Length: 440
Figure (tube, rainbow, N blue to C red):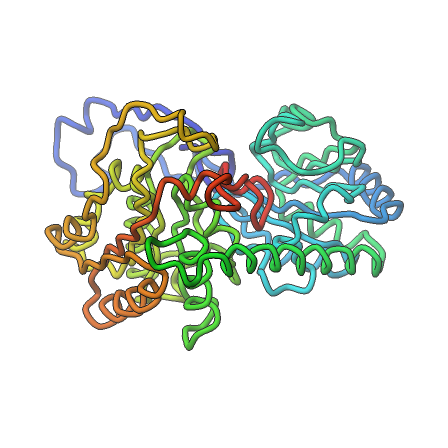
């Protein structure tokens, strides 16, 4: 991948000269052709044009319903404090997107992450570091009005206006641009817009609660709404500090429920699966990486060093990366792996409500992923009804705390839960906290 401090992730070729693989070295001084990083990298960042900042401020002055989309570049360049300063000064709601969530804290007064119903009303969209701009009107694209004006901020000039026309393009390091905007924008208020955001947040939470209420007493299988609700209650409304638990959020169908309830209160608290790059099933591997970072206290995870982490996947995802549980166990990583096992991988087209669309069956039904986890050195739990999930989660958490050992919670669902004509609401769309987060 390209340097994450300076650019968009993408493929790269690593070429090692023959002297590297053919000899042993005590240090870099033994290499004939070796340079200090200062010779081939720079810490200088592109600074925004004063004219572009002035044009952006003029648009912000005119807007009645502005919103900031804070994405990959805000996270990579650690620009969240500048983001908050800018947003608070101009009273502009913020929403996050990208592979990492939390640079817009869920409990910030201006967070609009859990208010997706308000997005179509926005009349000015300020994209900051949104490196993967979707074509307008495509599935999974942003739910904004095509009539909204756009300010686009990122360090690559060729990306400005590439998929969505920009009213103002600011070529700059994201942090520097946000600092400049915070200095230049006047103090503003948008009471009607803030009230609309709050009303949309209440509506979103009530919709989630309605899904949970349908299945909280269902004991014949575990509905994904129960997993999502009980996990959120455990992580954010128990004795565990709500900022503590880092979550590797994956799964194809289960994510459409869990992500509606998951919240991030600090940068890097949620790591989203890489579905935007057509990756299938990396979720347990993500849990491995997140677990290692938290255990060793690397980077932003240093503030929660040693704490348990959660990884979420489905039966298909476990099939792709489930054996990473062995690596988690080998290195004593306290990862709580939640597997939504609804017998649906390779069994039917998930987007269809018609059971007649069944096709080739690939996996056995009711596979005991928990026992596979036990064989790999993890603690196992098998959950077959709504009332069993929270106690299993509590036991797995204690194993993580007391033994620094991973767990596999195998949640037995039903493939028919995806059919809305049998079990409302069925297979959900990609409406969740954040913007287009599912595809990142």
